[in-house]
View 1 (cartoon, rainbow, N blue to C red):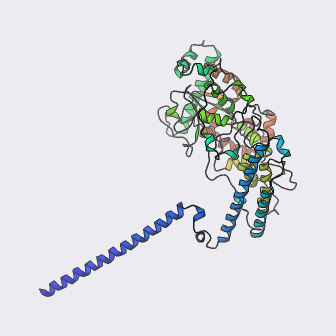
View 2 (view 1 turned 180 degrees about the vertical axis):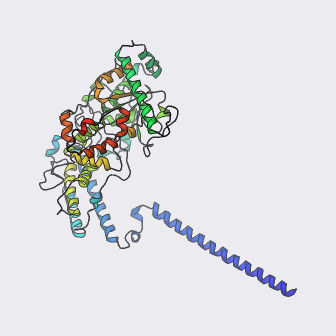
View 3 (view 1 turned 45 degrees about the vertical axis):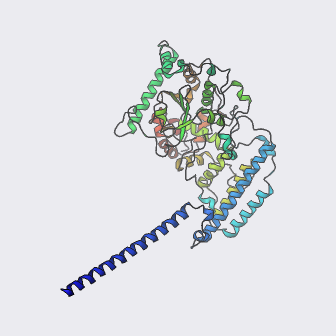
Length: 529
């Protein structure tokens, strides 16, 4: 018995020792995991400039990392100096003409001095680094594509020949936050809108009742009937996009993936009007019309340096498409559409042709040329990067680009075919060529009025009559296309494209064609083959 007791005690002691060893091992493992987790969080959230250099610059590819970091630092310094030069140039030259677009050079820029010697020295240092360390390697710009994450800028909807507003300079965006958060301006006390602010005669119900009191053969009643037909067509087509068919009015449909946070809708809560501005489709004219209805715009404002973007930001909030159906339920909702291919061509001619807008050239244009232009085979990738930077610097400085032999300057692009290829293959769509289906989400929220750009004079007058604002505002036309959009002009551009490329464009904008009853036939007839 005593032996059994001793054996039992030894067994229990051994079991306890084993349990203690297991507990110690678990504690050590947990401690190691905590340390590793802490190091991971530090490396993830610590700014790159404070991370240990040996973690970034170790391994077989350390030389490439060093070169990339050096090029990035030089690029950042160069851009900051060019930005300061532009700011000083703005101080020395007269105020920008009303109607200039973002970073659009004036004629006076042709007489501006060349970039400062400091900027030139940085360019020289950059060239020496590239030629000394990576003569035959790929230049960092060779992998230049569109932004990996879409950044929604405040929309630029001022055409090149618009005569009323002055645009924000891109170099000022994000620098002066106080200028963005200005106090909401007071309404013009002499305007009709101020005197009858909030009058029930402008409620959506009152507007509908007034319009239906017109004779059945009146032009206003015919306009309303056509709008009802278009909205019914939209509802039918939207149901066709869903499987199974869903009642658009009874069930909320989510906007396209990735655009729920994009703020596209302008809201006039005082006058109960919601507008989705489609850029290059009379958006400037209708935005000014909304300001005029609200009492924030006078007819003589076109003679002053009125910043339209800043004024709209102060007056009308922009809401996301996701919140649109709930916030605009009791509002008059409208949008203006245009033939998708005509709008695409207008975007190219206004923003990219001959690199006329420096902001859009540096954001997209030089990448369009780099990715889709055929270069001589003897030019290496690093040489292409330096040639691209040479043109880019001149465009940013606003000086004439005379660089014989530089393939980025002959022709100074992008060409229309290169622009179209970029539109077809870009990861993200800019608001100037984004589809109507994505931008205004007509299958997510219903619009009572869908005006057509092609007949905007007549339909615009009828819509203003429907709003009962004929005595306050008149239909404006602020964006006549230079050279027009005749069939000859259209074919001169779409003639650069093959039939296959145009068919790819048709597929990209297929929903827009179906929703808004447009046809691509005449554009297919212009194909080069």
